Length: 249
Image (cartoon, rainbow, N blue to C red; front, side, top):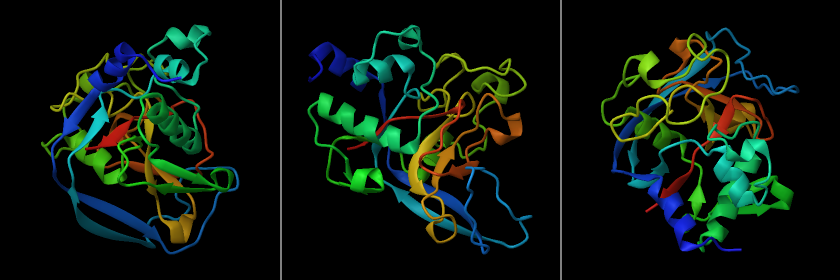
């Protein structure tokens, strides 16, 4: 069922328009092919055999949500708004990359937009419909560019001012928006929860592993930074991993 105009406006009021620009992305390639049978996220090598490359990418203007997707929004859109968790503004966690993709498509349908993702063979293959105005995950470079908000720093302010991390979170998840936003009005880009991005980490070495960004309430402060990148299987779920919405304009 489509959303009413009030609910439609609530979703769009949460989006921030990010201007076009460029972002320098570092990538690391491990020459040793490695897949994790138990979804471990660490890199198996000692770093000496990794090849680093840097690429300057043009970022087109796009929209990204002020906050990670919350339990409240997720359950409301999914039609399951009948639990204690549904009223909370904590980030939605324990969600896989595949489930985040499916939610983006569901939200697009609810708001009357064509789906951004074409899901093939029961979800094993996903294609982007680039011309779609529907909701999607941010691309890896978009996420980093939005996080830095034009100031180019690893952490856009003192870490305790902007992020929940291992040393100040009480080892628990917090509601969105309790810390200071970056200069573009985005909250919780660092800390609280890791956030899924669209991109494959390195298909040749890690097959279908997808990238997530930003650190979490369970990480050391030094981990919560704009260029920190981790990866795991798209079915991976954990209590400090969520996602944020994006949309092409």
